[in-house]
Length: 249
Image 1 (tube, rainbow, N blue to C red):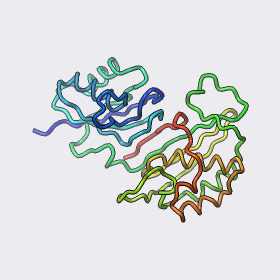
Image 2 (image 1 turned 60 degrees about the vertical axis):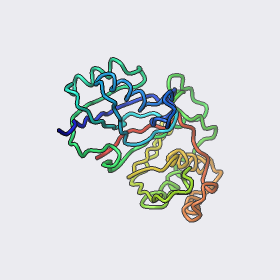
Image 3 (image 1 turned 60 degrees about the horizontal axis):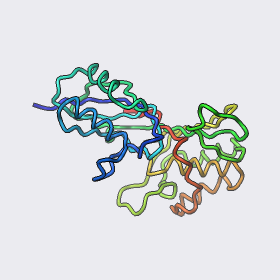
């Protein structure tokens, strides 16, 4: 008899966690995946493995992370949701739980993801949002940032915009949309694409910020694509401003 496949939609404040993924043999590592597996294993009496749509780094947050797990348990999806809501830490929340086909895989079946990065406008007060913003010291020229962002759209080898070391896997990705919104107290940059390399969104954000601050030209983006060298891209924006917003299937 085939196991049931349960899909979860989760939000979390990643501030105090070492990222999504369990860290090898370090069973005591404080990770989102580890917390979920611990609670689910107690609920079902099984050794549960949770598969996430992607691995958010230490300190990164999610409003719409998707994961799935297989189980023989007889709990309804509503009972699973209620149990997780009761026993998960208050900085991890379950939005939905539903039963999907045996073949569904939260990472392999994802078609598109959207990440958003939030940057505080210099000189503004952000008492309640301060933990979720990058306090970049310079005023940003949004027009220049949009020009630089336009060079990132489409299909490119993003190796130079990542922390990936040598790999046999493809580093080609497609970004379909980069939206930069300027508000009174913050700038929000939303990236939508078919996948993102290790630190790719944070390095793209750091590079766009440098363009906006006038310390690099928008066309420097093209040089990074040619050189594929991390040293040619901008700084890596800190983790606290980054949110996984949505995963599409």
